[in-house]
Amino acid sequence: MFTLNQKLCVMFSVLALSGCSSAYYSAMEKVGIHKRDIMVNRVVEAKESQQEAQAQFKSALEEMSALINFDGGELEEQYHVIQDQYEDSKEAADLVSSRIEKIEEVSDALFEEWQDEIGQISSASLKRKSTSKLKETKRRYNTLIRSMRKAESKMAPVLTALKDNSLFLKHNLNANAIGALQGEMVSIKKDVSALINEMNAAIEQSQKFIDMLEN
Image (cartoon, rainbow, N blue to C red; front, top):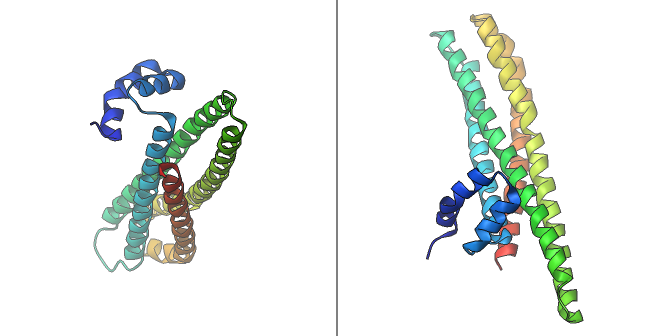
């Protein structure tokens, strides 16, 4: 039996060729992968990208701290290190945002389908139970997305600070530049700490939502 990821790989060409979400979902259902499965997979991917972003921003902070304690050598080399950290952090942040959008996309399709199918249930009792489950899933989903978006918003000030410091260092490759950047570190550390905390909350919410969908 194929795993979900294997089936996703098999069907990737369908997505690339169709360019249409509805066609993609229909094609996936033909191989036994439903919107609920896709939702779980995308939340897992978003969770992983958040964990990767956490690690990257921590790495950027470590390099900035090392720069402040720089005691000799080529400052231009340090500039390239900080610039690379900024680029890697921006890439990680963009991936987080992209995967959140993918979750929102499939959630719209899943909840619309779920609501339509509830209307096809003739048993009043089963209809009530399905409606209740849908409401609870939506509630938990909204909590998840709010948490993810809040964590996402915390990346912007850190990226701005990394870019500012990188450009400043580029324009001032001397010891005075290090002194000027020291004053920025308190703010950067505070922003990274807030980001890590919100990311942890979002990761926790992601796992709770995954557990709910899989049970």
